[in-house]
Image (cartoon, rainbow, N blue to C red; front, side):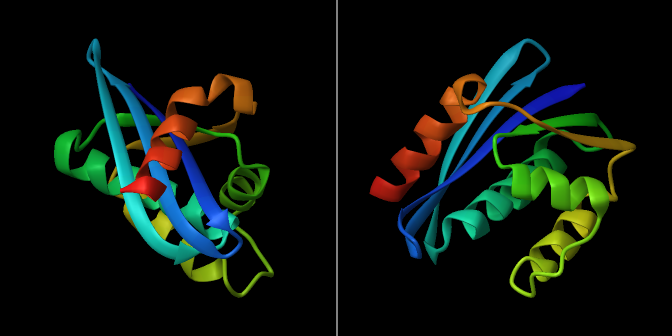
Length: 128
């Protein structure tokens, strides 16, 4: 099982944004700071999950994925497979599409204090 921590950050809302992805896999740690351009903070949070799924497809195909995010909006939207927000809908659809290639995909809400690595990477991505 691959543990994946994601976070999105924006400097302004919307503003310059970044995604942070921190992974624990097979006894190793992987860190990614991904610039996202101009987005809202919530869009950056969704995009961080999408970017992490793409990384997993490339490096860990067919693995069980356990995602963690401190964004209640992202976690609730993915768990319920529903949003009324027209901006979030295509992001949800992309998460569903990307996660379908894995045998199991779980996402769980965690507090910000348990997501510091991904937060630092997201903030670093804004500065890249």
